[in-house]
Every structure is written in C-alpha cells, then in structure tokens.
Amino acid sequence: MLRWLCVALLLLAGPASALEWLDSPAVAKVFEQAGVDGTFVLYEAGSQQLQGYNRARGETRYLPASTFKIPNSLIGLSTGAVSSVDEVFPYDGQPKFLKAWEHDMGLREAIRVSNLAVYQVLARRIGLKQMRSQLEALNYGNGDIGSQVDQFWLKGPLAISAVEQTQFLARLAQGQLPIAADIQAAVREISLLEEGAGWRLYGKTGWATALKPGVGWWVGWLEQGGKVYSFALNMPMQDLQEAGKRIELGKASLKALGLL
Image 1 (cartoon, helix red, strand yellow):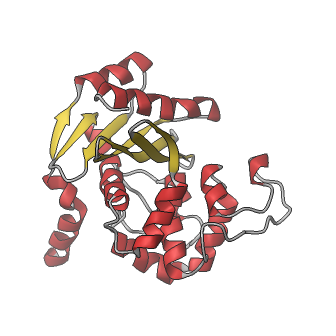
Image 2: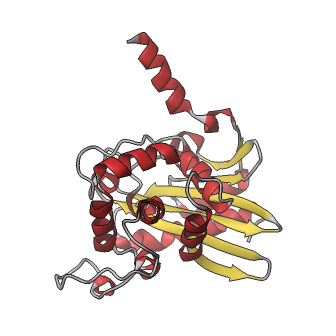
C-alpha cells in the first residue's frame, strides 16, 4: 500500500513540479485591476521556468470543460474515430444550446464554435477503453475518465491544472506528443485564433459549469520571435456575460509579459 502511495504522489507531482515559478507583478496588476481572483501561467517552451499570477490556483486541478476539445480532437484522429478535421458530423435536428451548433459540421468548425454535441459523438465513437489509454499516453491531468465517455470532461472525474495545461500544450505546439506528426499539425491548424506580423496565437476557451463557482478557461500558445509560449488562464465564471473576460485578461497578461 505504501509503495503504491509513493508512486501516486510521484505521478501527481509530474515533471512540471521541477520548474521554477516566477511571480509576475505586471500580471498580478492585470487581475487586481479587473477585480478577478484567477490565475495566469506562462511557459516558454524549453525553459525551466513558469511565470504568472496566483501559483496556488495555477497548480489546482479543475474540470477542463471545452479546453478538452483539443485532446479530444487528437485522440479522435489518432484512433480513426474521425477521418479528418473536415469529416462532417450530421446535425441530429434537435435544439442545441447555441444556434451555431444546429447544422452539419466537421471538427474544424466545431472547435471554433465549441460544439459540445459533435465532440460528445466523437467521444462515444472513441469509446472508454481507447480514450483511457490515449489520455494516459498524453499524460493529461489526472487521467481519470470514470465510466461516462461523453461527460467526464464536463462533470468529472477528469481534472487538470493551469500549469499542466501549459506543459501539454507546449508539447503539442512543438509536435512532441506521442501522436502522429500530421495529426498534431491538423489540430494545431484548427486551433489557430489570430495571426499578425511575426506572431500566431492558438487557443481554446472553456467553461466548467458543474463546479460552484463555475470556472472559465482560456488556454493556448503563442508563436513569436521564433519561440513558443504556452499559457493557461482560469477564473471564476458564473454566467456567459463574463465569458469575454477570459480572453481579455489572457491577452492583457501576455502583453504585460512583453508578448503580443
């Protein structure tokens, strides 16, 4: 029993625990001025340092919610549950949470409009056995998916911290995940949000409503100056009126750190 406890603690700590943490007064000011008790974590790929605001929250695991659409896409493509990011998932004709979800679409559009129904179909195609083994290989959060293959990222037991998000996304951005290079490239492509002179910004939002208070996410990475910077923000989020704050605070934090 003691042996297994020691192994579990080592797995929980993970490689991210060896990284140095640097508090950023500039990012702290962004959150304080906004009156938001959240966290922002930045990781320059290949470095040994994390920097940001609110380390304790940054190391706390939460439900990934729609940020899980990134690994779900990777796993779906890797297992053959979907043939490409453009394979069409038929709309079932039922009313959805958003009107934007009420038509046929592939993953390219589904990740952009955060279509839950499409990604639940994808998860059911993957199945519990493949989903569990693939997540273990990806070393994603606590790796626990329970027994409901289309609910675990929404209601638990899967959970991941902002720090862990930055490590996972840095590996994806650099093509270092244990998944075929062309599949990683395809998911990077559909995760692109914006680009400008000398930079590209990738990311995905999320809103974990099963938690009280809810948790809003914005995670992704920035390619700038020949470097990759992965980041993760989460914050309390009670309703959709607060949704815009996630990206607003995230971009302000990146700028406070001299990026974008």
